[in-house]
Structures are given as structure tokens and as C-alpha cells.
Image (cartoon, rainbow, N blue to C red; front, top):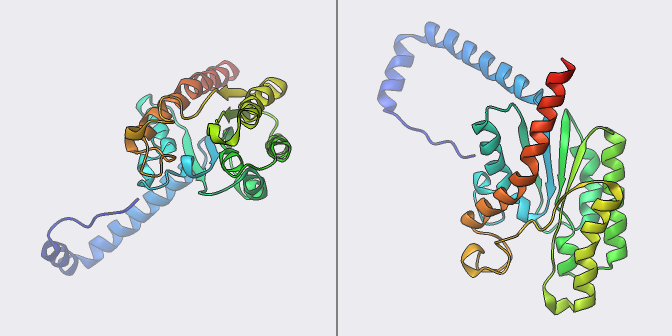
Length: 236
């Protein structure tokens, strides 16, 4: 996130010149506090968003992408969780699988898997997409069997043909049922196909569109966070 420099520069220079010893001590204390805060943040349970440009927030500021908006919702409830945006523009399910090992680090408790949309847009073989999704699930389970996996359902445009579109649609619901995953039926519900909620390319949500996507995710994610907190309290 970009940082803005504010305040009167001459005041800062004067204060620095008049009290170097004191400001040096305060600077060390501030740096120590920042390191402690960072270390504390690193210990928070993580919601990892593995996704494409839809998750990355293509064309928008990072804080306008739905994972950042979900973080705001988490914070508003006073829950101590950290949302990590691992969205990558243009990535297929094969690409998501290749970089997953690098992403599986730290106290991840929930993984939201949003991938396959670019497979569909390119008309790739759906058997390969299915195999990649299965391999992604296996890697997450291999890292920690207690992680909750949320699968984000996607759709493809009808110009790819009704059979392909139906197979693509069924892929997510079938996989979620077979592997007992939590399913977001359609990530872009209420956004897909709307000119006013998508950028000029007709694919990527605007800032307002991302807000709706965040609501779609939050409806599924909030109960999972509540269940996790309740389980922790019961165990303590």
C-alpha cells in the first residue's frame, strides 16, 4: 500500500536537529514495536486466497481487491486473523499448482481456492483442470490435514459451447461434494455479466464489483471463522 508523506518538513528537520539523541532512542523503540507487531501478525491464523486476477484485483488498488475487503470485515468483528492475497493475473490451474509449495507457509487455517477461470477462457481440457484441482487439494492436505478448504465456483461464457459450459460448471460442485469442501457456488454472483460492475474488458470487477464479490465470499467464510473460534474456546 502506498505511503504518503505528510506534515511540515521544516518542523521535522528542526526536531531532528534539536534532539538527535532523544529521537534516536524513540526511533529504536518504534522499530522494536514494529518488529514485535510484525512478529505478532505472523502468528495469526491465516486465510490464504489462492487465485487469479479476480483475486489479485486486476486494474485496482490492492486494498480494493476482495481479500483486503474481507480483512476489513474480519477486523470489524475483532477477530485476529490475517487474510493473504495470493492472486496472480493470467494464471491457470496448472500455474496455481506449481507455486503452491511456496505459498504453504505459516499458520494457514483456511485456503480459498479460486482457479480454473483462465483454463475455461482458453478452452483448455477440463480433465486436466480437474486433475490440477485434485492435486492442489492433495498438496494442501499434505501440508496440514486440519486446514479448511473453500472452493470458489466459476462459470465460462456461452460462446465456448453449452456442453463445455455445463462440464465447467459441474466441475466445482462435483469436486466440492466428493471431497467435502466448502463451496462458494459462483464467485462472481451478481457481478458477472454486468457492464456497470466490470471494467472495460467485461471480465474484471470494478471496485464496486469487488465489494459484491467480498460479500459472496464473506457469506461462506464468516461461519467458518466462527466455528474455528468456538472450537478454540472449547479446547481451552
